[in-house]
Amino acid sequence: MQYHGFLMKRYIFRRLIPYAAVLAVAFGVFSLISVLAVMEGFKEEMRGRIRGSLSHITVFSRFSTSLIGSGELVERLLELEHVVAAAPYVEGVAMYRANSITPCEVRGVDILAEAEVGDFAHYLLRDSEIEMLLKDDTAALPDERDPLTTEEITSIFSRERRAHKDQLNSVFGEEREEGFRVLPQPIVVGIEALRRNTRIGDQIELQSFSPRTLEARVQSFIVVGSFQTGVFEQDQGWMFIPLQAAVSFFDLFDEEELDDRVSGVSVRLDDYRNVDKVRETIREEVIPYLAHPEVVVRTWEDQRRNLLRAVDIEKRIISVMMMLIVLFAGVMIFLILTLMVIEKTRDLGVLRSLGATRGGVISLFLRQGMALTMLGIVLGSIAGVILVHNINPLHDAIYRATGLRLFPPDVYYLAKIPTKMRVSDWGVVLIPAVVFGFLGSLIPALWAARQDPIKALHHE
Image (cartoon, rainbow, N blue to C red):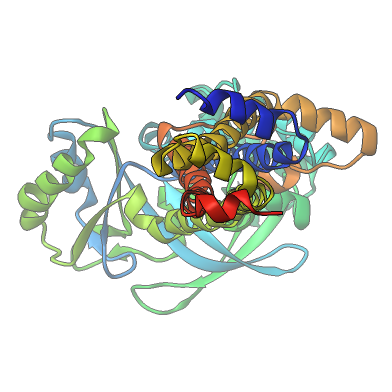
C-alpha cells in the first residue's frame, strides 16, 4: 500500500507550521558550521603565530641560564638527520624604564641564526611598516609580506643605525677614558611597547639580576627596531637583544668553565613531522654526552600546550552551546509531529482499518520527521558554506554601513577573519542534527502506531 508519499505531501508540505521546524534545523546547522569554521580558522592562525615565535624543538636547562657548552651542543645537533639549523639563546625577566617602569622578558639571540631556526625574519618590521602600524591601530600587515633579508636584519642591529638613531634623539652615550663615544647596545621591542611607552631611538634602562651571582644588573639600551608576532603578550612584553649583549647584561660568563652560560638551544627541522624521531634521538644520543645533566627537550607544542588546550576546550564549549539550537529543532519536530498525531487520530484509524500496519504508521511519521530534518540540514549547510566563504566581504559591508568592527584587527592582529572547514567538524554538525531529528520523530511515530483503530475511528 503506497500511501506514504501522498500523506506526507498532505500533512506537511501543504501546511506552514512544519516549515518552522525546517527553519530551526537550518538555523542550528548554519550556526554550527559558521562558528566551527571560524573557531578552527582562528585556532590554526594562532598556532601558526605561536609557532612563528618558537622553534620546532628547544633544548634547555631546567635551571635558568645554566646550560654550558652550547657551541658543542649546536655542533652535535647539526650532525643529526633532519636538523637544518640550531641557535643558542638567553632569556630572562627584567624591568625596563622608559616613560614608566614595566616588566618584560629579555631574549638574547644570535640574530642571523635566530632567523634560520624560527620566523624572526618574518615578524621583524621595516621602518615603513612600523610607521604604518603606529599611525593606524587598525592597520594590519599583508599576508604576502616578504620577510626581511639578511642585510636588512644586520642593518637593524648595526652600529651605524644605533649612531643615527642616537643622534636623532639626542641620546648621549657613555664616555670612555680614551675619549670616544660608546653607544648603548641595540634592543628590539614589540609593536605594543612602541604604542604604549617608547619609540624608535629612545634609550631605555633594563634592570634585572644575574642568575649566576644574584647581583643586580642595570644597563642602557637603544631601541633600534620593532617586531609583531601577532601574539599580544609577546608583542607587549618581549624584547630582543644580541646574544653577547645578553650574556654581558646577565653576567653569564662562567670563569671556572671559561664559557658562556645560555638558557638553551633552538632547533629547526626540515619537516616538523619528524619531530618525535628527532626528539628521541636528542634524548638518547646528545644529552648523555653533555656535562650538564638537567637538560630538557621540548617541542613548541609542549611549551604552549596549556594555551592550545584552552583554545580546543573553548571550541568544544561553543560547539555544545550551539548544538542546543539543533536540540531545540529536534524538540520542535517532536511537538509538530505530536500535534499531528493528535489532529490526525481519526485518519490513523481509517488507515489501520484499511490494512495499514503499525510498521507502516511508524514509517509514515519517521519519514515526515526525517524529511523536515534533511531539508533543514541541506538549507543550513548551503547557507553556512556561503557565509564562511563570504564572511569577510560581509564583515566589511557591516563596517561600512555601521562603523562597527566585529573582528577588530588591533585586537586580533588579523587583516581578515580566518576560516577553515574540516571533515570532522562536518560530522559534529550533521550527526547530532540527524540524531535529534530522528529521536524527535521516533517518539510520536511509536505513539501513533499504538493507537487503537476502533477508538481512533470514534475520535473527535
